[in-house]
Length: 82
Image 1: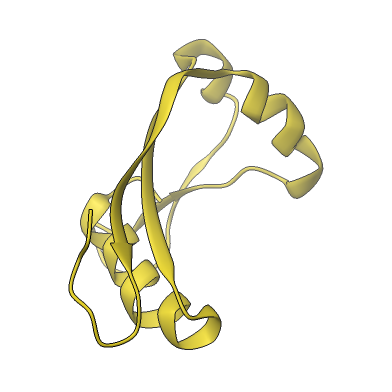
Image 2: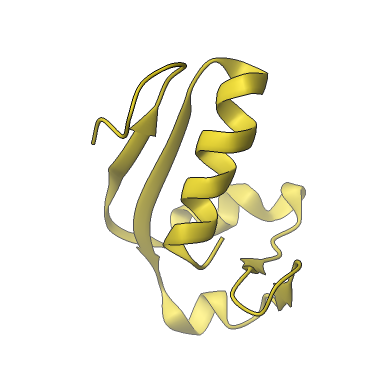
């Protein structure tokens, strides 16, 4: 997801009921590398996703720059705890 509000909605409204918890992370990826992947609109105007094939995730992960931050976390019957 390329939009924090969309990521929050998925983590809170889908992941918590399905898995018991939901997390939103923030990280940067090397701009030149990530340009190979299409951005897709997955609904509304602001619902954007970067489509990375599952078999390319190890290579994608090697191009993460810096730290991965947990910026929001959700559990049943709780508010954002990050």
